Image (cartoon, rainbow, N blue to C red; front, side, top):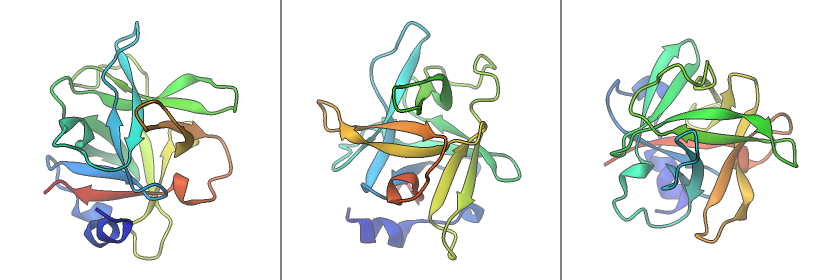
Length: 172
């Protein structure tokens, strides 16, 4: 699906269903948010964005749950589940890795780091910044790993550019 096709299918937050699934797509790369396969010692998985074919993989589908105001949680609907959260340590660039906790419900183990503000950046309300509870803006990294995926990070400043912008598209 092209970026134009994605934008034509994007929806405002007011149209989110409480149990409906959505793709969360990085506007800059036209890449779909997903969780990696492997877990670390805390049972967490890296969050990535992937350009191109999703191949029917359920790791790309999310339920966005309103938590009041502009706050949402992002729950992955894959068989292993996992909710997004911001890691607690910075990398060499001062960014915080975005992770998925590999359980099917929010269990309190990550404090309130599973809460994200979803803030419109355009007049039509279909392109968003996703801001962590600590105020960092979620972005897709420039670097690609061996699978061609981009890591997802929270950056403390400089939200310029479409790598910091996200759209929400219903899963067909």
